[in-house]
Image (cartoon, rainbow, N blue to C red; front, side, top):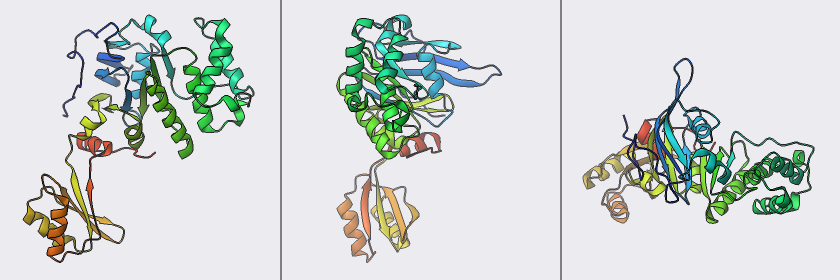
Length: 330
């Protein structure tokens, strides 16, 4: 079984830290068991640094949404503890914005009117400032020009941005987004990704659940990887990727000759694979200089169509941790 790595936080079983210096999210042994014995989340120990864009990564059904529902008080945990912003849940929630399982708005109302209705349902929202706050939220997500447009005429990306605007109607220290790019076209995905980075740049911690490896890698500073309800790794994107070896990839029509050269140089983990128009050979780079490898191949009359140094991605990390893959691009 893979060992869970913790970048920061108290040992498993300890009470979550409290106070202004505490992480944005901390869980200790958080578990959810449904009737019939199914364990959706199994003794989760999570630590989300303040100011981070934190990717909560895993295949569909790995326990991500159940975890988010427990964090927000929508579902009671079977056991374990958690804290948001170092505060009791009731005190923390007014400082938390959330988008869980997609937006729900009135199609015949404008974006602005929908936000006003949404705000009116919040008993803690000051009615005297609703116009200013709605305007600021629309401006922050880039929808000022479309404020009077009916929701049914919004694109998918605009709808998702409006949902994020609803989560930002008050000052938020933490924003929780469950699959914010799910179902979006490439343009909508880029819009949401850019918005998340802008919100984080303003000092808000953003917790993003996703099953898309490439999306998390482009958007996030930190990540945690879930599998079948268990946490298998967490840390910065750089530290997660750093656990996998850098490899060299050679495209050549003579893979057997390339393998002999790499073996003579002492490279480990040599593999042959098929690519369009020929074959490729990969190996762990280790301490070898790519230019020396190329010179050795050319000196041995091995035809080299391409040579690249391949640094590990989150996909490599996940496959290395679990022995399986999931959606990279959707």
